[in-house]
Length: 216
Image 1 (cartoon, rainbow, N blue to C red):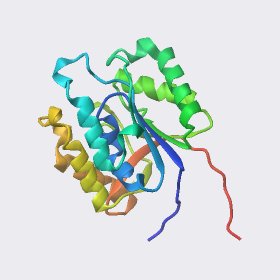
Image 2: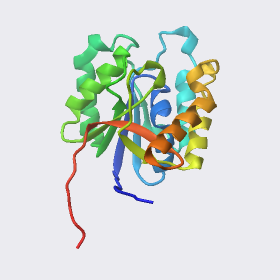
Image 3: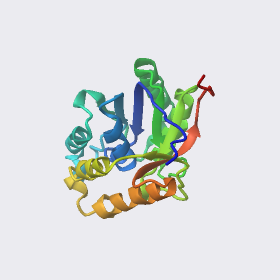
Image 4: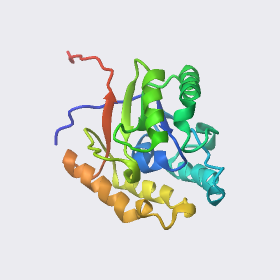
Protein backbone atom coordinates (compact mmCIF):
# COMPACT_ATOMS: atom_id res chain seq x y z
CA UNK A 1 0.00 0.00 0.00
CA UNK A 2 1.38 3.39 -0.96
CA UNK A 3 2.03 6.02 1.68
CA UNK A 4 2.81 9.01 -0.49
CA UNK A 5 3.18 11.64 2.22
CA UNK A 6 3.66 11.82 5.97
CA UNK A 7 2.90 15.15 7.60
CA UNK A 8 3.50 16.28 11.15
CA UNK A 9 3.24 19.40 13.26
CA UNK A 10 4.63 19.90 16.75
CA UNK A 11 1.78 22.33 17.35
CA UNK A 12 -1.61 21.91 15.66
CA UNK A 13 -4.55 24.27 16.15
CA UNK A 14 -8.21 23.41 15.52
CA UNK A 15 -10.57 26.39 15.28
CA UNK A 16 -14.36 26.28 15.22
CA UNK A 17 -17.26 28.65 15.59
CA UNK A 18 -19.41 26.71 18.05
CA UNK A 19 -19.08 23.85 20.53
CA UNK A 20 -19.28 20.58 18.52
CA UNK A 21 -17.88 21.93 15.22
CA UNK A 22 -14.33 20.73 15.79
CA UNK A 23 -15.37 17.26 16.94
CA UNK A 24 -17.77 16.82 14.02
CA UNK A 25 -15.12 17.80 11.50
CA UNK A 26 -11.88 16.56 13.04
CA UNK A 27 -12.62 14.22 15.95
CA UNK A 28 -10.96 11.12 14.52
CA UNK A 29 -7.83 13.03 13.52
CA UNK A 30 -7.58 14.65 16.96
CA UNK A 31 -7.84 11.22 18.57
CA UNK A 32 -5.10 10.00 16.24
CA UNK A 33 -2.59 12.78 17.00
CA UNK A 34 -3.38 13.92 20.56
CA UNK A 35 -0.73 11.69 22.16
CA UNK A 36 2.10 12.76 19.86
CA UNK A 37 1.64 16.48 19.23
CA UNK A 38 0.54 19.58 21.10
CA UNK A 39 -3.07 20.26 20.22
CA UNK A 40 -4.98 23.47 20.91
CA UNK A 41 -8.74 23.59 20.24
CA UNK A 42 -10.36 27.03 20.03
CA UNK A 43 -14.11 27.62 19.78
CA UNK A 44 -15.11 31.26 19.35
CA UNK A 45 -18.69 31.17 20.67
CA UNK A 46 -20.03 29.53 23.82
CA UNK A 47 -23.63 29.68 22.48
CA UNK A 48 -24.86 30.78 25.91
CA UNK A 49 -27.35 33.36 24.65
CA UNK A 50 -29.54 30.41 23.65
CA UNK A 51 -31.13 28.97 26.83
CA UNK A 52 -31.59 25.56 25.21
CA UNK A 53 -27.80 25.23 24.85
CA UNK A 54 -26.84 25.89 28.47
CA UNK A 55 -24.97 22.58 28.77
CA UNK A 56 -22.96 22.62 25.55
CA UNK A 57 -19.77 24.11 26.97
CA UNK A 58 -19.44 21.39 29.61
CA UNK A 59 -20.37 18.82 26.98
CA UNK A 60 -17.62 20.26 24.79
CA UNK A 61 -15.00 19.85 27.51
CA UNK A 62 -16.09 16.27 28.14
CA UNK A 63 -16.10 15.53 24.41
CA UNK A 64 -12.56 16.85 24.02
CA UNK A 65 -11.40 14.81 27.01
CA UNK A 66 -12.61 11.66 25.25
CA UNK A 67 -10.40 12.61 22.29
CA UNK A 68 -7.39 13.09 24.55
CA UNK A 69 -7.38 16.90 24.75
CA UNK A 70 -7.13 18.25 28.33
CA UNK A 71 -9.32 21.16 29.40
CA UNK A 72 -6.33 23.52 29.61
CA UNK A 73 -5.90 23.09 25.84
CA UNK A 74 -9.56 23.87 25.09
CA UNK A 75 -10.43 27.56 24.69
CA UNK A 76 -14.01 28.84 24.42
CA UNK A 77 -14.58 32.47 23.40
CA UNK A 78 -17.53 34.81 23.84
CA UNK A 79 -18.39 35.96 20.31
CA UNK A 80 -22.13 35.95 19.70
CA UNK A 81 -23.46 33.15 17.53
CA UNK A 82 -24.80 34.14 14.08
CA UNK A 83 -23.26 37.61 14.32
CA UNK A 84 -19.65 36.83 13.44
CA UNK A 85 -19.66 38.91 10.23
CA UNK A 86 -20.38 42.01 12.33
CA UNK A 87 -17.28 41.33 14.41
CA UNK A 88 -14.92 40.39 11.59
CA UNK A 89 -12.14 42.73 12.70
CA UNK A 90 -12.35 41.65 16.33
CA UNK A 91 -12.22 38.00 15.25
CA UNK A 92 -9.17 38.72 13.09
CA UNK A 93 -7.41 40.34 16.04
CA UNK A 94 -8.39 37.42 18.29
CA UNK A 95 -6.87 34.95 15.82
CA UNK A 96 -3.72 37.06 15.35
CA UNK A 97 -3.24 36.97 19.12
CA UNK A 98 -3.80 33.20 19.09
CA UNK A 99 -1.14 32.84 16.41
CA UNK A 100 1.26 35.00 18.40
CA UNK A 101 0.74 32.99 21.59
CA UNK A 102 0.51 29.44 20.25
CA UNK A 103 2.25 29.72 16.86
CA UNK A 104 0.84 26.53 15.28
CA UNK A 105 2.47 24.77 12.36
CA UNK A 106 -0.89 23.51 11.00
CA UNK A 107 -4.33 25.08 11.41
CA UNK A 108 -7.70 23.42 10.80
CA UNK A 109 -10.76 25.63 10.19
CA UNK A 110 -14.14 25.31 8.50
CA UNK A 111 -14.17 24.41 4.81
CA UNK A 112 -14.72 27.18 2.26
CA UNK A 113 -17.79 25.18 1.17
CA UNK A 114 -19.56 26.00 4.46
CA UNK A 115 -22.63 28.23 4.17
CA UNK A 116 -22.95 29.22 7.83
CA UNK A 117 -22.01 32.88 8.24
CA UNK A 118 -20.04 32.27 11.45
CA UNK A 119 -18.09 29.39 9.91
CA UNK A 120 -17.29 31.38 6.76
CA UNK A 121 -16.09 34.38 8.76
CA UNK A 122 -13.68 32.28 10.79
CA UNK A 123 -12.17 30.72 7.68
CA UNK A 124 -11.67 34.06 5.94
CA UNK A 125 -10.06 35.65 8.98
CA UNK A 126 -7.93 32.61 9.79
CA UNK A 127 -6.37 32.76 6.33
CA UNK A 128 -5.38 36.34 7.13
CA UNK A 129 -4.25 35.70 10.69
CA UNK A 130 -2.17 32.61 9.91
CA UNK A 131 -0.32 33.78 6.81
CA UNK A 132 2.62 31.53 6.01
CA UNK A 133 0.95 28.59 7.76
CA UNK A 134 -0.65 25.45 6.34
CA UNK A 135 -4.45 25.71 6.68
CA UNK A 136 -6.85 22.82 6.02
CA UNK A 137 -10.65 22.95 5.95
CA UNK A 138 -12.96 20.50 7.71
CA UNK A 139 -16.59 19.72 7.01
CA UNK A 140 -19.58 20.18 9.31
CA UNK A 141 -22.07 18.24 7.27
CA UNK A 142 -25.22 20.15 8.22
CA UNK A 143 -24.01 23.47 6.80
CA UNK A 144 -21.73 22.63 3.89
CA UNK A 145 -22.54 22.63 0.20
CA UNK A 146 -20.27 21.00 -2.35
CA UNK A 147 -17.55 19.89 0.07
CA UNK A 148 -15.17 17.37 -1.43
CA UNK A 149 -12.11 16.22 0.52
CA UNK A 150 -8.85 16.50 -1.38
CA UNK A 151 -6.63 15.93 1.66
CA UNK A 152 -7.33 12.54 3.22
CA UNK A 153 -5.77 11.41 6.48
CA UNK A 154 -5.84 7.74 7.43
CA UNK A 155 -7.24 7.02 10.90
CA UNK A 156 -7.80 3.83 12.85
CA UNK A 157 -10.94 2.05 13.98
CA UNK A 158 -10.09 3.14 17.52
CA UNK A 159 -10.07 6.76 16.32
CA UNK A 160 -13.48 6.23 14.74
CA UNK A 161 -14.88 4.87 18.01
CA UNK A 162 -13.33 7.75 19.96
CA UNK A 163 -14.98 10.27 17.62
CA UNK A 164 -18.34 8.58 18.05
CA UNK A 165 -17.87 8.46 21.83
CA UNK A 166 -16.88 12.13 21.96
CA UNK A 167 -20.00 13.19 20.06
CA UNK A 168 -22.15 11.10 22.39
CA UNK A 169 -21.21 13.53 25.18
CA UNK A 170 -23.46 16.13 23.53
CA UNK A 171 -26.78 15.09 25.03
CA UNK A 172 -28.11 18.50 23.98
CA UNK A 173 -28.02 17.22 20.39
CA UNK A 174 -29.25 13.65 20.93
CA UNK A 175 -32.03 14.14 18.38
CA UNK A 176 -29.88 15.74 15.65
CA UNK A 177 -29.31 13.55 12.60
CA UNK A 178 -25.71 14.71 12.20
CA UNK A 179 -24.86 13.20 15.60
CA UNK A 180 -26.02 9.76 14.50
CA UNK A 181 -23.11 7.31 15.01
CA UNK A 182 -24.03 5.56 11.77
CA UNK A 183 -23.56 8.79 9.81
CA UNK A 184 -20.23 9.50 11.51
CA UNK A 185 -18.94 6.02 10.74
CA UNK A 186 -20.26 6.10 7.16
CA UNK A 187 -18.51 9.40 6.47
CA UNK A 188 -15.19 8.04 7.75
CA UNK A 189 -15.65 4.88 5.69
CA UNK A 190 -16.48 6.91 2.59
CA UNK A 191 -13.40 9.11 3.02
CA UNK A 192 -11.39 5.97 3.64
CA UNK A 193 -12.66 4.53 0.36
CA UNK A 194 -11.53 7.67 -1.46
CA UNK A 195 -8.06 7.12 0.03
CA UNK A 196 -8.17 3.33 -0.48
CA UNK A 197 -7.90 2.88 3.27
CA UNK A 198 -10.38 1.48 5.79
CA UNK A 199 -11.06 4.86 7.44
CA UNK A 200 -9.98 8.43 6.81
CA UNK A 201 -10.86 11.94 7.90
CA UNK A 202 -11.31 14.29 4.95
CA UNK A 203 -10.31 17.94 4.52
CA UNK A 204 -9.97 20.44 1.74
CA UNK A 205 -6.78 22.37 1.10
CA UNK A 206 -6.95 26.08 1.86
CA UNK A 207 -3.18 26.58 1.94
CA UNK A 208 -0.21 24.20 1.98
CA UNK A 209 3.25 25.43 2.92
CA UNK A 210 5.93 22.87 2.15
CA UNK A 211 9.46 22.17 1.04
CA UNK A 212 10.49 19.44 -1.37
CA UNK A 213 13.48 17.36 -0.42
CA UNK A 214 15.16 14.13 -1.46
CA UNK A 215 16.54 11.46 0.86
CA UNK A 216 20.19 10.75 0.13
